[in-house]
Image (cartoon, rainbow, N blue to C red; front, side, top):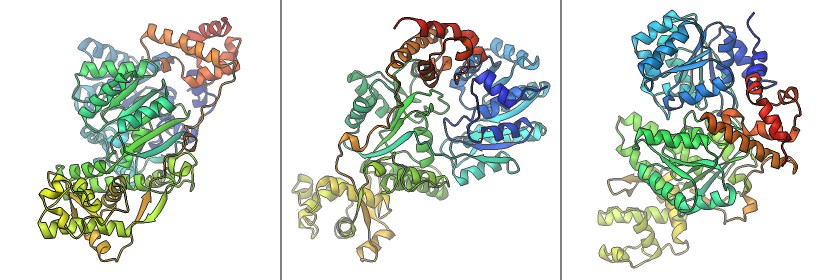
Length: 602
């Protein structure tokens, strides 16, 4: 008889009960049904295909774009006693043949494939000769051409059902709007599949967006005051910014590594490995890094540049706190970000529809940055889900910003742009506009005789930073446009309504800098005083074992498991086996060492 899913969960993975929709999804796929699963990072998506693969006869074939991580994924399964292998371009002929032989002999439970392997006829013939339990399409949003992480090879995955119509398919992703959800279903032929949409809420993540003011220094303050010694990811838009930020953090005594597509493949692999295997490493990266990273103890994700879309932002911030413990998603955002992103859209390849879609993505991201309501509620609404009016764990809930009637200020900015354009046939960026409004006699103002404009000096009621905030919000609301190589400003159709007094402009006023207690890091789940030393001893033991076996520490045991062991102090293998995350294989492999560590003198 086939094992029951709950038995597999307890015996192999060491957990007593399923979470959320896991049980229903697993029962459906185990019974041969197709499924499309939308579930947040850290929600337990992998169990939704791993357990059916262990329950059904044959091998579960997992399609994943994460070639650089397949070895780690397979190692994690092998540590659980699951027979797993992979086929991708990193292997030599001998390694591939060994995996193929194991597949044909029925000696694998799970086989990971890169999507491009399905374009190779020999791979298709290999699958024809074996017994397939299911197809799992991981990171399924990669099939959506208008999504944030499109992979052309994913378009060929519709052939799975055509070639193997009796094999159930499960497609999974951690992020999808309703439009992306529909596109995934259409492109993969999963319209008739059962769709499971879990809540996208990650209550353990504190979302914060700060006005940009020396962002690297702001980042450093965040790391030193709230995340000393923690592992985290810092995202930058450009490769140059990645390099400079990593150098800056290293110069401040922190362990920081760069990651971007311009680095040698060996350097990227080494840096990724260190991030996964060592404690307290900060990865500074472009968005080329992160998808599929299964490190559970990432305590913060910081963005030093504005993400291009809410989907990308959600996917990236979701890499924090996979273990469910408190974590921070922090973004520094300023006027230059809006200008830069608008310019990138104007310069992008593709037709008008493509640029319009990019603008829609950016507009939604800007709305999230400029909101005065709960950020978490707005984030959930973007994915078609509702949240409470106040989550109590984002910056706008902890330190609510004010709104003010910025119509007059908007008219002054727009009038300045109008005068420069119409009277002088000139266009300038934010710096010159602010200088004119403040009445500053700078060399550039004198050079172009801008002190003779009627708008010169009409804006002394606001400071320079406040005017830049006004311009940023006008850009965000579509009342100013960015044009040309030099990123100068021009009026839009919407700005004319403001100039004529037919539209009121409401603006966000950034709250005054609050004491640390107003925007606290979400509290850690405190360990009892007598448990904390044991927890540290268990972490030291785990680090030694991980180094000896060449594995990431979390593959041995998650922090959450070690915290429970430190709290309960089991005195027997049977008692240890009842701890969450301690399955049969890990109990047999590490159980006595854990008990010895517990019994050792402090």
